[in-house]
Image (cartoon, rainbow, N blue to C red; front, side, top):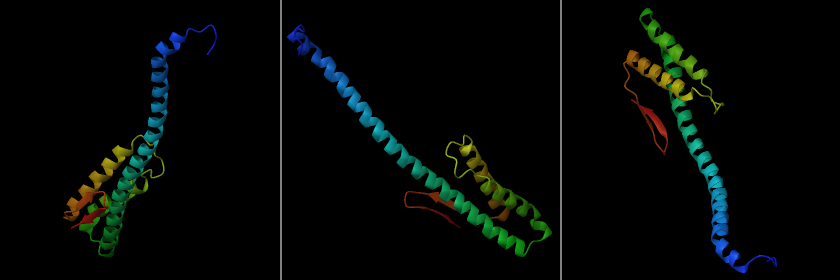
Length: 137
């Protein structure tokens, strides 16, 4: 303590000093935990989207194989929608987390998938959960 500093100032200002130190420590700890929690949340959400897109892709490839093996003129619209869905899935930006239209593109893929299911007269039951996801009929 400096000789010219009043000893009572240190006592009076202790509250302000400790408040500032506590705030700084809390801010640093919160920032660190926020980054960790954000990474975990992003990883989980990314895995769910990847699983959903993967199910759509597997579904589309299976139906493409089935339809191409016995394609008739009646199946041309189904094949057109199926090829459109596959093209949308292949153009989906898997490796760009900063892509701004990610959710819009995902909604378009979901819509195209529903359209294809309607044309194929298939009732899918796609569920996303913590345990995993699946597509059942």
